[in-house]
Image 1 (cartoon, helix red, strand yellow):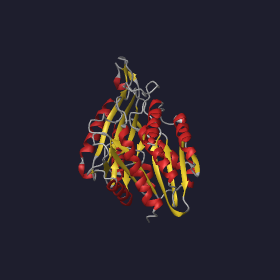
Image 2: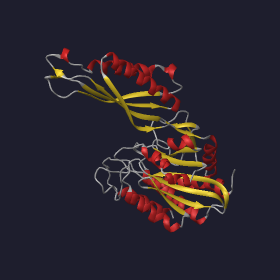
Image 3: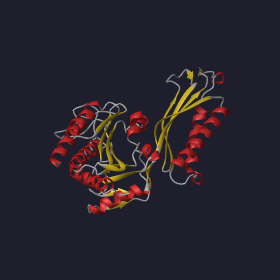
Image 4: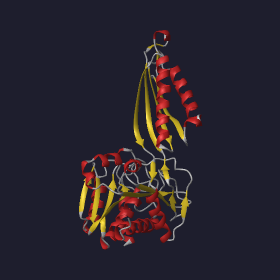
Length: 379
């Protein structure tokens, strides 16, 4: 069985597709799981699929989620199954996550749920934030309404097969803030006839840096990273009248993100007004923190112990973000880590390749959770 799953992983790795374009990936998954006779297959969002396995008796609805999408990154690899698509690669491990869920489907097909139902969700567009949100907003998602949702992510730098756990926030909230400043263009020889955003940019950056250092405002980590600044055009004869600043806001707690956002907006609006500039603030790639439910964490912990796996309990959330946080806002859930190796290249690196040997560990962990809830009717 595991050989077949590894072959599937290699095919997925070789044929990556970027967010919301995972049409062939979705079909490949459907071709693999449909012969296992799920009770129902529900299309969700653009390319998402939910495979439902109904039980014989009433009980809980348990969902296991994987991502479909790859990244717009050129792979550096001599693998026989390296990406055949230029500048697209599975260098985050979603191919491995999909394979784990496919292996779980095989085990569930052989041991169907006695209670409730199990849903295997293949979700698009995790990398660009809207995937989970779009899935949840799809009217067909109401057919599922899970009691618990579980997902894993491979973690480089952690010993292979280890299970990484944390109650509460597991990964950070983040959002991209775009600040547009509208002044008045003038000749460079007559700057007094224009309204340049240059001074405002300096003041905004300075005060945003002061904001992130004001620890009294936040419960835990709050971070602002200036990622891009554009001021006017490259023209030595022109005083600029327009500017953009792009900032990534990040926090471990959702409450801190609210405070960080409001305080940043206040600073930007006050400086813009003082500098006679019009200002527009917009957001993109918004990720809530992935906040784990204690009961769901307990299921993962039991599964790890019963499979004799090392548990790595972390004290602080990961700084990266995951759109799994959208599910966590509404449903009991747990996002946990699966160690992918001490020397494993970091996520999103061109030479990243998901290690096949941890696939079976992921399958066993998910299956043990499934056994507790939908085979033994753990209430």
